[in-house]
Length: 567
Image (cartoon, helix red, strand yellow):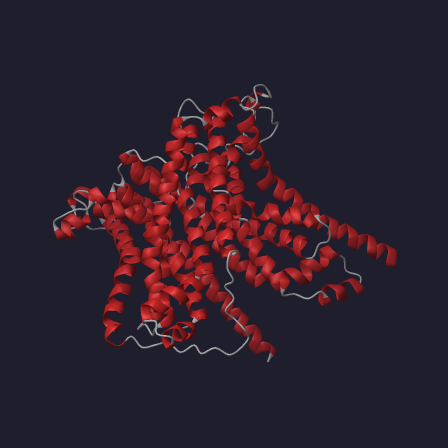
């Protein structure tokens, strides 16, 4: 019996490890490998390894590449600067002072996370363009600013500055005002103490959040495509898309540009690590720390006005523009009572309409992606945390690789991997190809959530199960998975919300005639049906916001009921 139990345990542990390995190979490793191979061997798609590096170096020497790379860096750095200018002041105020209505401002500044950048950009176009909503209300437009490099940076900064705000406000809150007070005792003024003491101590949080903003901005497709192409401002993401979607198709060039884009993201990460290792930022010593915040006094009203203004720009204005466009019968009719109605929603949600089909496709893909990514993430995290040997390091590295892969790069890798003529069976040109792309892009979220939960679990429960004759597979299903389920549900809700409205992968790899929410919105704007596109955008925002909120509330209710029952 003992020998049989050990054999069963080894088989169960091996099954989990090889399930994680196979899943990561199919979802992550194969697309990455094909990008590298296609960049080196331009004739690989024809089954030939001839002329290695012939197009690789030609693409790198192409003057257009320098323009694309330069524009990408300009856009990334400019967005970082805009996000920092918008976020640093309010983060410091939120952390160090008693801001009236602080929780309300936090909630409002959280909403931009729920608005896809491309939808927000379309809302800004409807507002600031000639004869847009601003001109109808105030008599002037800001089209010259909107359709400029600085305008693109500002719009993307408004979409991302809340990332910096939340990270930096918590960092400032941890630091508190005590170190600044020491500086003031030695004669420094309030501003000098902040900039010379408090602000430098917050550098880890600032660097981490700005790195995330930089990565988000260089991989964002919707905003540069919607605004940049009108002024001839092309970046690497749009350059990659052009090489895949326009004739003649240039797969080796797209693969090479993808490697350049990934290299930029990795270089930013390396720079962050170098900056953070040059100094010691430790501030928590184990002693109790006062957390009292100062009163704003006469500055309370201006500070509230600042929070209200930024909340309106980041949250209120895009949502109002989306809703106004969705409710107008014709764009030319303007903001007049007679032009408002529910016609776009009736057409969108009518029985058998393309919009209703696209909505159903996205919701089905979102749910399936959440379930599969959650399961693969849990198995991978378990194999990494509870496994033994150096191979788990390889699994961990593969699981976080998508963090450095922009969505357009994942799409390129998926196309190259599964569009080979020698494959007997392929998911290409089927909905399953979208599923592979979504899982690859979003896999790191459930892996990180599951890893954090597993580190909090001791080994005694599994050891007890082993003593009782249970193998690793059964212990994982019956003990570990239920214990980490709350964290996994949270991760899967996030995956669902993002997958349901993902843009660039949907545009590049969606089968012909297969529409998702993002594809439908994008096509409606291309065809001049902005009202239908914004009606879909509004429905998507409501559904992908309400469903997670309902699920989270349900989880809390079940948790409270369980605790009450135990008591």
